[in-house]
Image (spheres, helix red, strand yellow):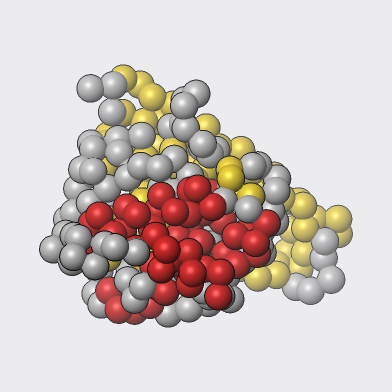
Length: 272
C-alpha cells in the first residue's frame, strides 16, 4: 500500500516566547515493513541542529527558534510504501537490549488490578507459545478498556484507564505495556500513523505497543483494533511511554501560555 501523510503542528503563544528548543522524531523508522518514497519536514525560520539515529533506532533532530516567537508551524508531508509483515519488526537497527524496555514509568506502572488482568489473561497458557501469550494480553486489554474518545486525558495512567474502563489508543497501549511488564515481557510504546478508513478505531495519528516475543523479536500489537500493525500503519518512533515516544518534545521560557493545534491526514493511493 502507498500512504500519503500530511501532519501539521501549530504552536501559538499569548505573549511572544523569548525562544524555544525542540527535539523531533518526525522521520519514519527504517524497517522492513515500510519504504520512504518522499518525506519533508518544514520548520519555518527555525535553526536546524544535530540530526542522528539514537540507540533505540529513531531518527532525531533538534531545532531552535530565537525570539520573540509568536507562532511556530511544523509541517510534515510524505509518502511511504508499506507491506504487511504481521506486526514483526524486521531489518530495524537499534543497539539497546530488549530488557531495557522492562523499565517502568509512572504512566505504565502496573498496579494490583493490572497485575490481576495480566495473570487472568495468561491463565492456562503456561505451555503455549510466546506469541499466543502476547495476543492474549492484547485481547484482555481490549476487552477491559472500551475505546471512547475524550474519556481520558494526556496524563492518564494505565492504572487509571483500567479503573475507568474507557480510553483511547494511548490508554490501550499503556495498559498493554503494563500487563506485559507484569508478566516480565519487555514492551514499548510506538507512535505512528494509521490509515483508519471506516473500520478501525483511532485517529490518523495513532499508537500501539511492541512486545518482545522470543523467536520473533519485536512484534507490534494494536490493542484498540485487536490486530497487529499491517500495511495501514506507518511506524514513526518508540519509547517507554507516550511522553518518551512523543514525536515532538520541547522547552521554552516559563510564563508563556501555549496553544497547540494538530491536524493529521493519512490517505491511501492504492492497495495491493
